[in-house]
Length: 103
Image 1 (cartoon, rainbow, N blue to C red):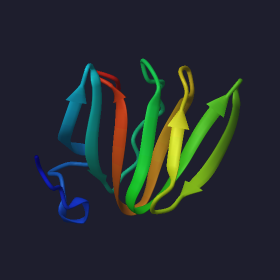
Image 2 (spheres, rainbow, N blue to C red):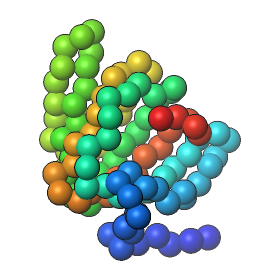
Image 3 (spheres, rainbow, N blue to C red):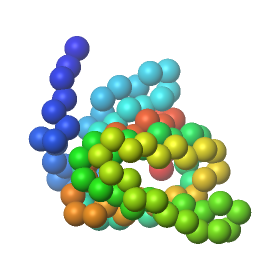
């Protein structure tokens, strides 16, 4: 049993994470960041939930680039093969659920 106050979490580096759970190879992690990640495709599905701040999520489908602005409480689901990159606007805290070892 644990309680995590996400707004109090600050990592020592951008995209640093606090491991919350690993359930049969699916991880749930709290990330803190103030800089963009990098374009990537996960090994499986990914659920990305903005808990604090704002994040512009850029993604490519069939070579066409789009973006969406994610606010607190918004959820981005990346299906298998979805190329994407998160660009926080200032500081952001996000909950990421994905296959263990995914990029």
